[in-house]
Length: 509
Image 1 (cartoon, rainbow, N blue to C red):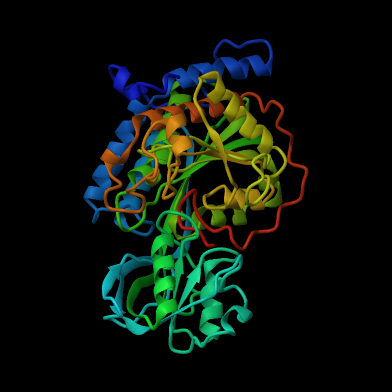
Image 2 (image 1 turned 180 degrees about the vertical axis):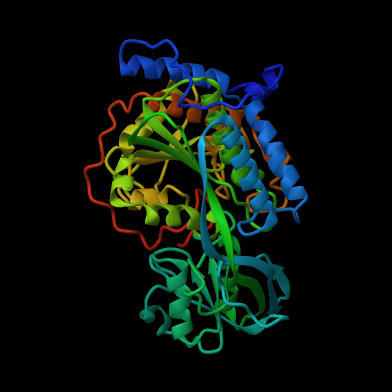
């Protein structure tokens, strides 16, 4: 693996899959004498075969689909349906056992997001509607702004609203301490007619209330800087705002795509996934056509290799991740106890080509001592294996918390060892990270996150190439040997109320 320059710029031509393959019928390649040697040999071959150039043709297809479907590939839309059909056909032609996993959900489409300060100093403030929010009247909701006193759990308890009247006002609440649904619920109970939640770190705040049944009042998110500015202004005197936040919400049907090798022991199933849907605001090339295309490239190269895996390998392309991990949640929920026990590990790849990227590896052992704690037993080994691979190729990297913001969340909650990589979303790159990875300090890892500009120009070839190699190494290794990974022996972890959305995507808290 050569991270710089990216492989798709260095290789003369993409490998093209021309002949359908049946993975179970293909003869085994020459093998080393131990499972570990088989795994090491095959992982090297798969890393060499899989390329960013090969995966880029799938990105181009996803972009073309979005261009023909109102500019997006959101769950429940023609753009997502066409994306799923493309992935399904590619895998079916390659010889996989492929199925659609269909489920119902509430489709949402934002119709208005506007916040205006009307007094004392008129100005516009950027606001993002929380997923599943209640809608304001058309034309907006005009009311006085009432800041909630900031502490570690701002707006989470009734006592937070006791010191000041909130009836008929719009509550201004700092992020942190509990999920967004709880904050707007408590604000409503205190008489507020709307809620504005501001970030507790740099960057925009795109959030979800978790589902249509949890929303009570119109709720949107703004930046930390805007929140602090409004709080300071309100401390000097009355501030009135006009908030126009409206969403279309309706029942629709969508589907995951799941494919697995015909060969391999089902009791040792190796599973990898990425979400295929975009938000409605853009085509979603980095978020998450990048992970979807990388996974598809490796799956097709696995088929083309004629390798007969020792362990069953299963790939999944999730739908409705952007609405709260709905596809992966539905999948895990429907597994029988035996099917759940058969999954030896799950690896997640979401946003793997951010233009101002860092290289984040999920912190399976909680060695960073940040956030949600370690993953289920075995997650530490998955993190170590990815770190070892990156180290062997002299690629810098760092840990990131299992915060439940992507499709590994339901697998962790089910007690399944999990891991994966991520290259950053709306978070801001530090000076230290700019020295480590290059790029620009003080700006977002992906300035086009959840925006119309998340198109083909929003892809880092270097990051894309690195993480496709990570996927290929994992598939090549675990297809034959689970190594030091321990079989799941712990009970399922309790579902976390604050774990709702994706690796840098729509958090619930």
